[in-house]
Structures are given as structure tokens and as C-alpha cells.
Image 1: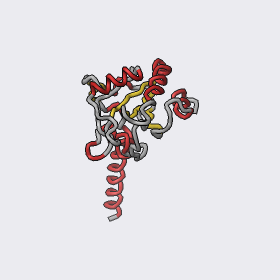
Image 2: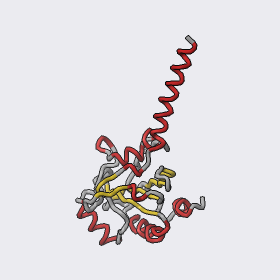
Image 3: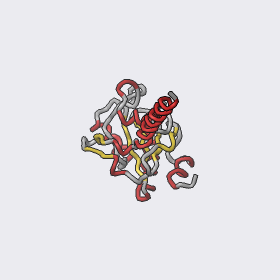
Image 4: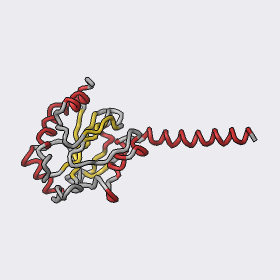
Length: 185
């Protein structure tokens, strides 16, 4: 009887460790999605870089953050840092436009050159799989979160795993973000 219980305990631990291992092996690099131009964007090509994932909107009080995001991208893009923007219409219909209109708005008003993805949902039953990864500990191995508003920032380390979640109101040039990019904090 003791051998049977011991055997079952070992099997149970191995199964649990296998599930834990699966979560720990999940990274942002598993995703391939469409960019705002309709082309395939493979996150695998960002391996080894620090990545900021941010949900964006064109008609939001926080929309001027595009300027700060672009400045941050320009300053650090040659140092292994990239910003990936995800337009989303989940908060008070603040991103109603098509991909083409969003792209034009970002370029014309803020000179955005960092990668922008096709418009997705970041909340609810239609949440895109990449945001399921970002917001669920069972998928990301970091922690559960919810997207509070437009311009919430997920900071992904060189290993492809989440390292920080930054409030929508925190400006891109905040000390917390700069220190993370530069590796000084």
C-alpha cells in the first residue's frame, strides 16, 4: 500500500512539474500576428531584446503618450529595445478607426515608427491570445493582471518573459521605465 501511495505521489509531482515547466517555457516569442499593414509579425525575431507592449488608442486623454513612446523608441532602438503597439477599442470606443486610419493618425500626428499591430481586443471574451498570455499567470508564469485602460505597458525582458506591468498613466520617460531599459534598477 505504501509503495502504491508513493508511486501515485511521484506521478502527481511529475505531472505538476510538467505543467509548471510548460508555463515557465511560455514566452512572448510564441506569437505571430498581423501588423497594422497586414503583414505577419513574428515575435521570435525580437528574441534577446527588451520589449514594451502597449495597448493604444487615438481618441484618449492619454493619446499624447505616443510622442513619448516614439522618443523612447528612437533613443533606445539601437540598444536592444523595441516598443510594440496594439491599437484596441476596449475603453469608451476610443479607437474606432480601421488599421489604415490608425496608421495614418499615428504617423501624421506623432511620427510613430515603432511596430504597430493590427487592432485587437485586450479585454473580455474577444481578448486576443497575446493579451491572454500577458494577463494570465497560468500562461505567462509572472502574475495575473487586467488591462486597466489605454496605454498600459507590459515590460518583457530579453528572455521573452514579463518583468513589469506599468500603469497607463505612467509616462514612457518615467524613471522606472528608463531604469528598466538601461538595466540600472
